Length: 290
Image 1 (tube, rainbow, N blue to C red):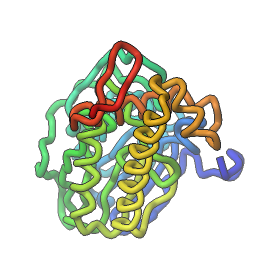
Image 2 (cartoon, rainbow, N blue to C red):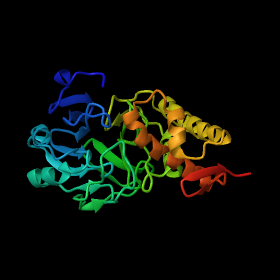
Image 3 (cartoon, helix red, strand yellow):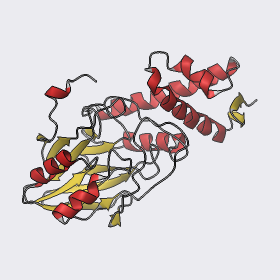
Image 4 (cartoon, rainbow, N blue to C red):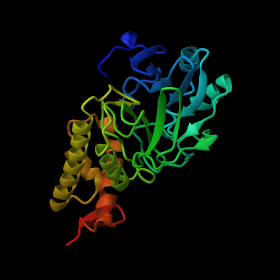
């Protein structure tokens, strides 16, 4: 990580844009960058909290202090990994707010992750569908369904296109991990195209710096995924049939501790290629189709 933990603004509400403040949770790791960024959207009268984060006492207290006397109209989660949603229940109890946002989802994963496991405690009061909106005087959040990282992933658009809160769909510090069985590369690529066609001025991700050149960034992300797909096909043409043999070739410059997570993304690409009729599999081995 680029910044020392001593200099990071943990448990402080930072104004970063009109209607937007950010509070950084103290859960840094190789998987979460400097930590989960929770966002307070609204005014001194009415706010929504996006991705309240881990159920950490200092972080929840910081969120409650930032809310102050405002009415919390909703606590909105982009998805239900444990670095995003567990604090929702505690914050709702403190503020009387409703948990309104992504659908509940709890799965047993079958492989290593680059992020947190699913939050089994998440129970929303209401689920937002694509295009559903909440807000108050002067501001509005609209749900943008972006499956791929998880099947229940939502982004939230502020006032149409002022900003998009992107959760883990796109992040300013790293590519998003797509880990089957719930992570789906076909859906992820479609969701990237969906936000590319929007006109959001800035992205506020849950991890890493804000993204200002939004369409350029998404175009680069799509290109990166296509390069990974081409790498996989090229390596298979060189008779590499197993994911464990492909990853050391594809991720030479990446910390080996992240290779198990990289294997999940390669698997997601292979499943996508299988759907396209480009490859086939036999147990743990994959082959090109004629």
